[in-house]
Image (cartoon, rainbow, N blue to C red; front, side, top):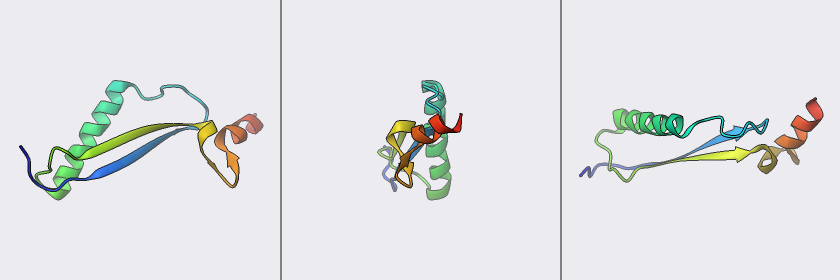
Length: 77
């Protein structure tokens, strides 16, 4: 068991045009593995309880300036 440092990182994948499931489960798993290996290269022998959280965010659920990304997409047409 690894007993070194650990980390937690949140990765948000915005979907501004509501393209459902633009990243497959396999692609996400590969990205999580690559991120873990990258942090291990920087920090050394990591504790296995280091978390990488990938969050798919729908365009209607985020935005800026008081407008959602869905609102912007609908008007860009």
